[in-house]
Amino acid sequence: MYFDQKEFGKRLKEIRMVHGLTQEKLAEELNISWDHLSKIERGARSCSIDLLIAISGYFGVSTDYLLTGKEMSKERNRILSVIRDLTEIAQSL
Image (cartoon, rainbow, N blue to C red):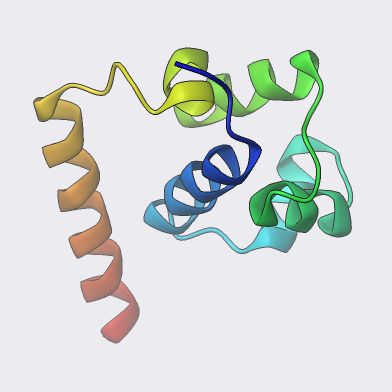
C-alpha cells in the first residue's frame, strides 16, 4: 500500500461531487484557492497534513480513506450512493 497522488485527487473529487459542492465552494470552505484545490484533484499537487485533516473533518471520512482508499465500509458506500442519488434528484427538480 502506498500513496498515489492522482488517486487521492480522484477520491477527493468524488466526495466533493457526492456532496454537491463546486470546487469554488469547497475551496472557500477549506480556506484555500480554487486553483490549489483543482491541482490537488488532478493529482498535480499534494496537500499539507493540516489540509488533509481539514478535508477529513469536513466530509467526515478518515484520513486513511483519503490517502489509500481503504477503510470505507459497505454501509458507508451505500450511504454515499444514496446521497449521490438524492443530490442528482434534487438538482433535476
